[in-house]
Length: 303
Length: 202
Image (cartoon, rainbow over all chains, first blue to last red):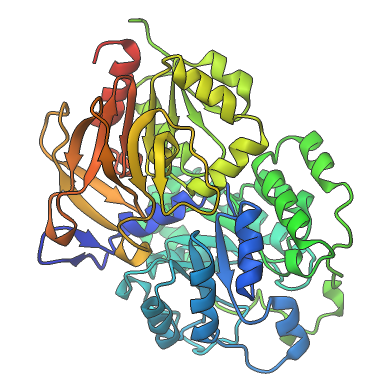
């Protein structure tokens, strides 16, 4: 199932271990959305473990409307040039050519993201075909396991990106964790039934039941705006968090970025979270999800 | 020391959990280290893979740099994988601006030397002192060792293709470092070597 690329000389790039291994290295670290090289530097200086290069943060994508696509290669080059930590970038769901372009630019991870406008209504990208690893969003275990079966090296629970409202991220992280626990209680026959019900390959379902966790890291993304939000997602079971609009749409991005990094690490220590939450200035203005039309919701994109 | 030692795994960022699991499979008591006082409870320390700049910043922020230097300086055995190797190096090339290491190993390490993630790779490597055939080594945006001081022993080099001949495993007394990640492949031989070093048996 893997797309091992054997080089003539005997070593190999793009193996499953190399892709999933990269995802493992990012654990306990914060991945931050940035739109300029200057923001990328601020994120790196604050201790981000990687940056997500994009043209507009989700809050602005919401405001501008229209079709949201892969970023301009010039802009991605500029960010790769500006920092020495890993750089991620987003491709539209199913848009394998955008992914090919991003791979050729040398990005370290591709996010096949529902924040951009989907390019295919039936199929996600065949991620085994790439050397670069992919992260995909999921609202439930079936969606997560289908993405893993397609080659995703990391899963992030979907939140409602660009809202500064963590409620959807909470719902989806709880759902995924609950379903992982349930798989551990099933016998062989029931696992076949679960695979059918989840529309996911039996082998992957069985592996999750055996491990008690996904076979790839599970992060959380979408709606994280404060240090306490980041710690909430960690306590609910996320191995780390993506922060999008929450940092650079706030009053003091450098300070907030630093505070979220610290809260992500010390997520079980309320005293640290209290300390870093002081005097952060204005958080991004949130959106109440009841105010969003169904067509304005991103988490429902993908299947 | 011959009794079963306790080994700490630095828990600032990265694949701490994978190292803890490997040690657990070897039956060695292991615990994450996040606070300076936790260093007093362990007999050896693993510095995991992850992002070295993030780890260095967090170590400085939580006043771990001096306690780590002190314990390593006083002879606490330590093993660094990838980012951990960078932290143990006396000298870093291609670090982020102002990036500091803990030091201890008399070597110069080049960060991200093998390239970006699309160039990350697997190789089969012979490691001196580790019997049972070549080690399946996973390299992720990995550093290599550019040069070593006289007291550092080179234990392994990359073996294939255009990447061949780079130093990727070294030891100096109680300090061990690899560019690759044995914690990702499930092969316990290098962890066992480190546990033996901590016991004073290797």
